Length: 492
Ligand code: HEM
Image (cartoon, rainbow, N blue to C red; front, side):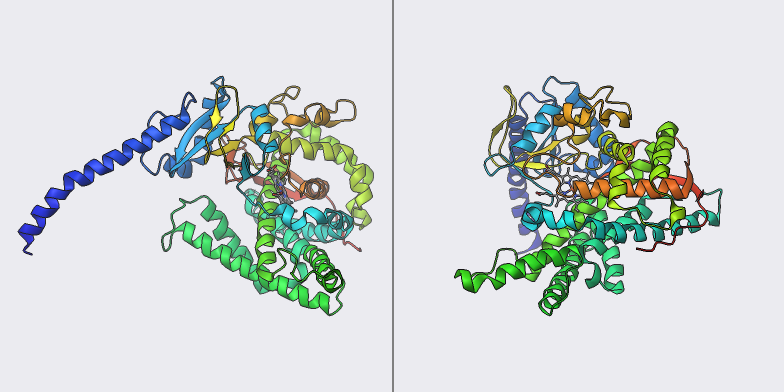
């Protein structure tokens, strides 16, 4: 076929091709309008991609605009369209509560880390009884990191240090040590940390799986992370079989699995317990580490930011902690002392309410679900109940940072329980919440006892950004110096 004939054939097809394309674009729009109905949201959306570019380029602005649109409508909801997905943002606390309470096969499914209950649901006891072990591990790790922060800060006292990644490093090390401690070599830890960064960056990238894209790098990083954790599971199984005493979370969990396996012949069961293969355990551990990691980092950053903003609260924290524990004693903070720090605990709970780390918890509608009298969420919609918006409704002066709301006298945690969604509610409620709050209280107690600190003030530095958990806009720039002499040398 000569090139003129080829071109004339192509020219014949082109109008059909464009008509078909226009037809699909129209169909997509109609589908969007059918789902959106009377909800506020963009009238027209870009084909296929929808508004993903603005979501990725300026996530904070995107979600703020969803929130404002929802707030200004009587629905308390707003719609949008992202990479072929119809999404609904839920601003009203009652409606968010309704979504969390209807996580079941014929209503909503949690999208992120869905395996929590499978992993540790029945093993919560183990988790709690070992709290004192974790307290020792954590304090030693926190102390080493804080020493390093001081070293960094003292290099140039006029330049603030950025705490986002430094807080993340504390949490990476504590969660790795508490969950899989002895099975991660220092090389595996270093690889783990690099891959964890790639994974996080990938979360904020376009979900387009092309070679060298952030998304592809994140996918490969997750595979390597799961491989590392699968090796940990294998090693743990073999060490426990040869008589090692459990010392970290995976040990306690694996011990239960091995006990179940041992009792199989007597009980006539000839199938291994579900989720007991090394790769299953490695994958679930990855989910668990992910669930534990970033939200906790966010809570530490907000603790520093809010204590700096509220000197009276900081003074009360220092007074309380100083009454109960002092670094000069060279002793670790005990679980009992932590329980006595009632005000600091209230501060930690208020941090989670006022600046919720996981601002939204995406769910997918498995079936059509009548969320309000006038609007049914269509099957397949991704809904974003806003935990942050819920926390800022209902409570007395909800826009004020006021830890006393959780005091014995005021008990707003009980009165407005339905609005306190920082750890979710219902079937998939965060199983790490006590662990996370203890971690936060420990951190606050140590940080405020060991350091004098001041935020580096810049325009809108305290504003919320989504990375994707919440974080102060400047990544928490701080000047700090040691206030205790010398550092405690813990003897456990
Ligand atoms: C300040 C820190 C934390 C915050 C704000 C937080 C928040 C949340 C939220 C909002 C959910 C979803 C709840 C729902 O859908 O109802 C969740 C689930 C979960 N969290 Fe956390 N979390 C934190 C720390 C942790 C830690 C430290 C761990 C582990 C030790 C953890 C483990 C989990 C797990 C496994 C799930 C999934 C539960 C399930 O699917 O059944 N979280 N978390």
